[in-house]
Amino acid sequence: MNNQSRLFSALTSQVGRKVLTGITGVLLVLYLIAHISGNLSLLGNDPTAFNKYGAFLHGFGKLFYLVEIGLGVTILLHAYIGITIWMRKRAARKQGYAVHGSKGAPSKQSISSRTMIITGTVMLVFITVHVLQFRFGPGEAEGYVQTLSDGTKIHDLRRITVETFSHIGWVVFYVGAVLLLGFHLRHGIWSMLQSLGAMKPRASGTIYALAFILAIILAAAFIFLPIWIHFQGGAA
Ligand code: HEM
Image (cartoon, rainbow, N blue to C red; front, top):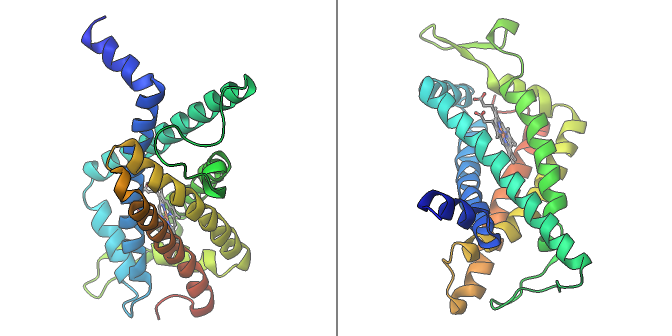
């Protein structure tokens, strides 16, 4: 077996798949931290802050599109491997081999870990709807433009956000989806640290707690925004 096919079989093995879900998971959590940090600029007193932030990112041109493509591929890869891991486990359970609980490391079975396939699938649907609505929503040609004090015209992403969350139905949709995201992250962050071998058995409890706290902070921030915008209408 040559080096290339050895690498391929390592990556497609059950352990390789778990490591790949871990690596793609780390990238997605980093994206979520960056995304919520940018979104929080909707809360300040400056009504141009959010759009300036968007314009700054789009200003990277080709590099921005490259990162976007990388993000899309990471999401699809993460989902694909997650689904294949779940299908293999299900097939093994049908044959009567699998039991609830993990071998070696302490078992962290919870409602979050048992519903990863459901919360993950809902996330895929949510992200598709969200990206169509926000990233590929009304553009400058449709009049979604903000003119800055120096006359520069930038895409009015803030207007898309405020208009979307003025409808209670969208607020409920976002809050519901992000609640499930919280459950997905709670198990996902713990599992990814374990797969990547970052966790010494003694630190397991602490890391489990940290994963829990990070999941709660991220979910709470993403839940807070639509509710706040619904009732405040965004920064004045
Ligand atoms: C309060 C909630 C949220 C707001 C206000 C928000 C806002 C936005 C906006 C304005 C964009 C378009 C950016 C652009 O055109 O450059 C965007 C893109 C995106 N958002 Fe969100 N978002 C929220 C929650 C989420 C959540 C919970 C996720 C993931 C689970 C997510 C994932 C994405 C992705 C993957 C993109 C596409 C990125 C790109 O192609 O540049 N967002 N979001």
